[in-house]
Structure formats: structure tokens, C-alpha cells
Amino acid sequence: MNRIERTERIGSDERPGRRARRSLGAVALIVGVSLASLGAVAPATVSAAPSRPAAPACATGTYTVVRGDGWSIIARRLGVTTKALLAANRATTATVIHPGRSICVPAGATPTTTPTSSPSSGTTSASNAPSASCANGTYTVVKGDGWLLIAKKVGATSKALLAANNATTSTALFPGRSVCLPAGATSKGGTAAGTTATVAVRAYTAAENEAIIRSVWPDDLEEEALRIARRESNLKNNAKNSCCYGLFQINWSAHKSWLAGIGVTSASQLLDPNVNAAAAYTLYQRSGSFRPWAL
Image (cartoon, rainbow, N blue to C red; front, side, top):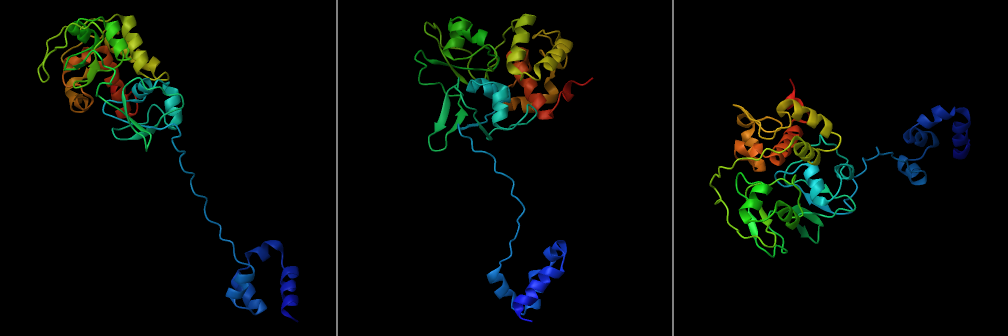
């Protein structure tokens, strides 16, 4: 019996399943050829485990997270919805982000704060430096400042100040940041950096505080955030006691170490509803839940 006939018998005598399990080495032995020769005629196919698909490239550029950022804050800076930003990064509101991390910018982003860009990488990061369009000068934020207080210091309306900075009342302010002065500002001075100003914090209305919370917290979390704020402070931004401050009654002593990292360096700053709402959302991100307010 020649080699071809022997090979055909192998194929005719065995069931398909059994035939498939026979190794190339066994077939080579039967037909009397070397394994190398058989491999040259019918090379074995090696199946590799499918690799995990790579994450899609950020087609519209990236944003580098800076201190004090949260998903909703970044979304406002980029002029997009929080939902769109999360979708572009396959993230949820519980996904924690840290300074230095690059995240994808969704299509249609129109940054509302001055970016610094790298043409080669398309990377964008928030900058505390004033934009070149600050034709009327700048003001450096100091501890205790808020938009209304700065407006009073520079002799402008809060509306004009916000417009000059493409900001809203919910845009957080942190010491050291430079803001643009509007036309007609009569004073560019303020409390010197490193000193503490004693400023009475305005009592915002419940409706104003609710609007601030809604602007800071993502849409899918804002109702629970509002429920907690109503329970904790009855939506009174200047509520305080021996330990806790503001809308979300944040415990200053327990959290001051990390609060300093987002620019909150005194308990009185937490009476500003913008600062308090942003700090509360950061606290939520740090814990991954509303656990800090659990009863």
C-alpha cells in the first residue's frame, strides 16, 4: 500500500471528530514522513486568544485633569453636557479622576475657560492664567473670595464680572486663580494673598442654592444631592455648627487635609454655596457614593 492509499484509509476509517483530534505528529508517523515535511505541506494553524480591543483614540483631543476638577466642572469648562463627557470616556459619575489624568473631549466641545494646548498632542488642560483678552486687567482670587465679593471689590456688577470670564455663579473660584476684570472696573486691589479677609457671606435664597447644586452635580445625581442638602441645611448656604459648614454640612476638621488640595483652606469658604456644592461632589467622588451623608 503506498503512502497516498494509507492516508486515504486514515481519512475513510475514522469519524470526523476523532480525525480532527489526531495530531500532526501521529499522521507524520503513519505516512512515514518527517513532521517538518508534513508541516511544509499542511502547516498547522495556531489559534491565539482574541486580544482585548484597544480603547478608541480621542478623536477630538484630550483634556488634562487639574486640581479641583470633577466631571461636571470639566463638562462646563468644555461647553458640553456631563452625559456627553462621560460617554466619550466610557465612565460614570462614580469614576474617580485625579490631577494629571487625560480624558477624551467629546465632539462639539467649546471650552469656556482659557486652555493651554499642545498642537502636536491635541491635549488641553485648564489654566489659572488669564486669557490674552483680559484687556482690562486681572484680579487674583484670595481666600474667602466669591464672585459677588470680587465684583464689589473691583466696583463692577457681578453680571459684568461673570460675562468677562465666561462664567456662571456656579463656577468655582480657588485662591491663586486669576480672573478677568470687566470694562469700567474702578479698583484692581483686594486683600493681599496670604491674609484672611473677614467677610460676611451672603445668605442665598433656597432657589438660588438649588440652582447652584443642579449646575454642579450631574443630572443623574442632582435629585439625591438636593434631598441631602435639604436634610442637612434646609438649603441654607450659611448654616454652620461646631463641626460642619454649608449646604452639605461638610465636616471641616475631618476633611480639611484633602479640601486644601482643591483650594479650600478655611472653614468659612464652605459657606459659599458654589464652593460647598463643588466640595461635596468631590467628596462623593472620593467615596464613590453618598456614604459620607449616611445616617
